[in-house]
Image (cartoon, rainbow, N blue to C red):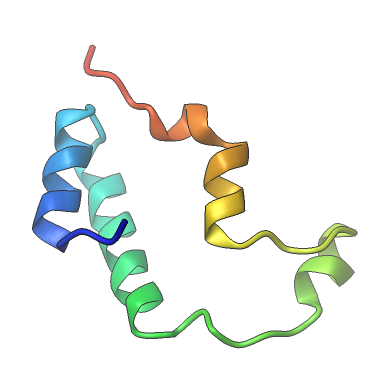
Length: 71
């Protein structure tokens, strides 16, 4: 579910994400929202040997990396 960027940043901070990661993910979120990643090509398959994942699939397959905890 889409949320506002301030809420996204607060959630990341609450999960213990470092400031540089929050800054990066906010920039990516803005680009994603603005369609920067909407184009298609075959570079991922050519370079990596497998089809690219959409955002939802990537997060589902890497869920543990998004469950940050405070130390």
